[in-house]
Each structure stands twice: as structure tokens, then as C-alpha cells.
Image (cartoon, rainbow, N blue to C red):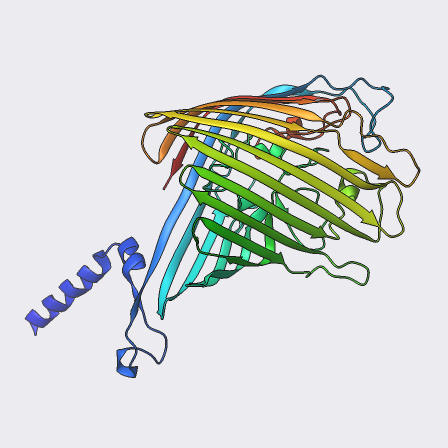
Length: 426
């Protein structure tokens, strides 16, 4: 009896000493009422904990605002105030996240897939947006046909550049991300999330309540399709989103076309509150190409955003603008050098009252960066970015940045940011 007790104690101790992570990644799942005794062989499921911690110390400012009382501004522009954003410092957690993802082999070539990703507020800011699943999260089925999943996920329009040679040299994130101009019409609009029934003017979003289908690569071609359900439908509003991206990646060459439709998101009303309507149709188009020359990648991206209001309206009923981008990335051993130039045109518009001016709505952005890779997962980096707004424009810095600089100051003011940071992925 004493020997049996010792053996039982050793068995229990060994079970509780087994690392939890190993159990999570190698556990064999058995559904209720199934298993080998019911003619079904248990199949392996794997779970991975992953994340990116990305912090930088930055200095930001916004200067050169158009003087108060200036006339001849664009129709969509607000009044000139001459207000600048004073220089200040910040510690930013740009896009830091932690997540869990996994697959279960269902047999017959099918797999169940899931991911739950959340913000990681490691700089001590307010915990707004820190709920579980506040970033890319899904549940789906994958097989020979590709993957079909439901969730809260980056739209294909946003994700179309990921992992390709068209990708933003600065990884489409941080205060220096390309969304400062690409995907934004200006007017202090920043990328964020899309939800049916809320007004939205940005085209680089994560869509809630979405159904997504991604193909497997076929001779270099892939496609992504997403629909965000019209849960916000009312008697006079039918808001939904369609997003599509098609890619060709073969050897040194990447090609891209992306399209996105926002129905009844009233982007023009976001830009100008007096632009009212009973319905709206906002559309984005992107074309891009990238090519690798040894350790150097060069890329070009073009975009058109087109906003239309219809029905009983006042103010501007249509605004269309084009923008383009040139990017370069060069690696020498552990060193990485980055350069990007973006430019938004003034665009064109129509107005219920007659004449509609877009004078001074253009902007340009220069971004420089350097990275030193301490390992495959850890990078030290430095950056500088500047947006030069024309006299009616208010393009702004994207993810991160001091709130008093990225939004609010007068039209025509020019945001700048510079800093040092560290990024670690696991």
C-alpha cells in the first residue's frame, strides 16, 4: 500500500510538472462521444502564443498653419485658424499586440482555424481598446479550397500589400506608416476600424462582423474577399462593406490590385458635416508593383478614393482624389535602410451650391528610416517623417503620435515626427 501511494504521488507530480505550453501545442482533442472507441482516431491540435512589442520614444510637432482669415480655401476645408501643435515628446506602443492562434486537423484535408489577438498597452496609457479580440480575430475552416472565416479582420484592401514587395517599407505601422496619405482623404482622418452603421472616411481598416475568403496561391496568384454584414441597417440606411484584393507574387516581382466599397458610410459627412445625404457610396482602388534587385526592393503604389452622396443633400456631393507612393528598402547584413515618398493630389469635387474648389487640398510626405537587427526577432530603429500640407489640407500622422499633434491643429499645418525605438516579435 505504501509503495502504491508513492507511485501515485510521483505520477501526479509528473503531470503537474509538464509545461503548459507543451500541453497546449501537443494536446490531442476528443469530442464528446467520439474517440478511438467510436471508430475515430484522435487528431492533433496546435495552439501558438505570439505577439509584437513595439515601443519608441518620439518627438512630434505641427507647424506652419494657414493664417487665420485666409480666403480662397477649398470648399471642403474648414476655416483657417493659424493654430499649430506645439512640440512634445511621447513614448508610443505603436501596434503592440499579443495573440493566440491555432489549427485542428479535422481529417479529409480540412482544418479548423482560429485566432484571438488583442492590443498590448505596454506604455501605461488608458486601457481603452484592450479588450480580448480588439485586433485581428477569427474562426474558420481551411482546406484545399483555401480558407473561409468569420471575424474582426483587416480588410483585403488593407492586407493586400502584406508580405509582398509592394508592402510599405515601414511595415504599414507606427506613426510613420503609409496610411498618413494612402487610404486617407486627409481632413485628419486616420486608419482604424469599420463597423456597419457608423460614419467612416478611411480605407485602411479592420472590419467587424465580416465574412472572409482567402485562396491558396496558384502559379503566383492569390485573392482575398471580404464582406462586412449590414448589421447597422435602419429604415433609411443600408450600411455594408465589400473588399477585394488580387495579388501576383513570383520570384522578384509583385503586382497588386485592390478594391473596396463602403455603402452608406457617409465619408463626405465625416469630412464636412454640412454634406448631408440619404445614401452614400465610397470606393477605393489601388494598383501596385514591387521588384527586388538582390538586397534592394523598389515599389510603387497608386490609389484613387471616390466619395459620393446622393438623395436630399446639402454641401459637397462628390469628392475624388488620387495619391501615389514610391518606396525603397535596402539591406546590408544586419542593417536596413528605408525611404518612402507619398503625394496626394488636390482632387475634384461637386457641390449643391454650384462652384466647388479643391485648391490646396494636396500634400506630400517624406519618410526616412534605419533599422539594426539584433536578431531575427529584435530590431533597433530610428525614423523621421514630415507631411507638407498645402494651404487647405490637413493630412496627419497615422498610428500612434501625441494626440495634440496628430489631430486638431489648423489646416495647412505640417506634422513631423522623429524617434528611436525597439521592436520584438515572439
